[in-house]
Image (cartoon, rainbow, N blue to C red):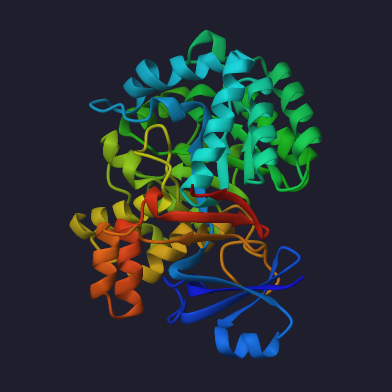
Length: 431
């Protein structure tokens, strides 16, 4: 049976970095949902008149937004969020990798995976590109937890064979065998997708990158995720390990690990040549402003990416980031840009796009998720300001759609998430 959700509604219908007027706001809006998909998003009055038999669910007092999309997050690192005072390689050695080694314990991995997907949902995330574990069994636990909850994920077993802790290394043969088994079991099952996941060129030899290339060739529709140009020390080490490569991105190009469906996390220190080739191949970037700030990795050169035509979305990069809330990443992106040397003043519609539709497009899901266009999956987050909260007071003063959306981006945390749904099915409701 069709249902109309009645609320104040925001979404973007295009990329506002390229198109003017991409934001849609309905003060008294209606979202028609039929069989888990969007029928129409419009003003409530006309929509109700055209669908008199539809049930109406009144969500007044809150705001309906498309489900958030996290383009880069690490499931095994959720318990180590909050480590400060370190740079990337030091942080990996002292905080992240010891915890990632614990994923060999399947009972531990199961507990963490279930907690991880619930955390994502409770912050309004409905779709995520997720680094799994270095172990096939633990990565399977992530897929099972996501499927049980109803979360949409693209994920994969992390592939590395050098320069990490020995227990996190695989042989090329084992990496191929376990990855293939996971792809055959999970890719395309319900809302699950597989993403081939070489950790980064620093920890993946040419043999491991060849395994990644083989998997991409053998299985249609799998995605690719890795890291690129995050810190100067990392870049220098990659240059030492691959002396034949003109730059960091050239390592991945050599093995076909780029193009549509490929998401590179960070891209903080790209060369002009890398940006040109990334744009030409259709490779996306996951911009992780909180992580870049926390680790002191540098300032994402957003203006250069925009001028070069490189598309980007937002990633929380937990555990190096500061939490799994995508709105917080949107706010951090705004704040960093305001003080950056090439600072630009991001608009609220650009920030909403980066938190929703951009991520869906990065994952190759632009036709399925990211906004409330007819035919897409009905993925939403219902935000409601708690009585007496800073958000409630700020909304009393907000007059324009831009002011309202700005207040939500700045102040709407987990305590404001009342309900989250994927395909019209709630996966989180506040108590």
